[in-house]
Image (cartoon, rainbow, N blue to C red; front, side, top):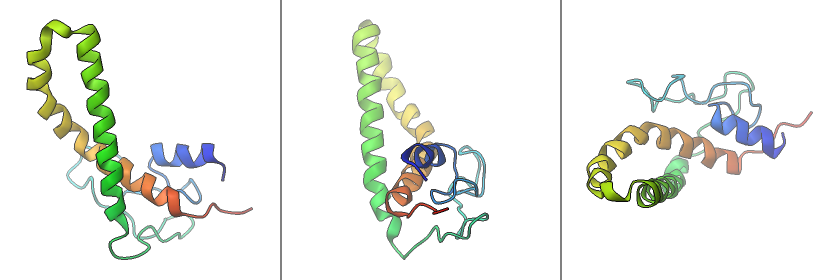
Length: 121
């Protein structure tokens, strides 16, 4: 699997090995069970939970993602909406609350994609 397909699988909730099976059980990040994931890929059988504590590294990816979002959000306000800094502070917490399920899922998929071997033909 090329890097292009691996990136596609991370962005589209697919197994990083085969790119076909779903990574998380729920299709959307905004459901009650947004954090429930398959233990094995439904398509290729890849182990999606390689060892206990494996996804602790995803916490750092999530932190980096939140930092990038915060910086982008700040620059939009500082360059385009500089007279509305109060709104920046008021909307910061709701934006992060809404981004939590997305960041959680993206960080886990990215972390596994870094360590999974691509499927060979």
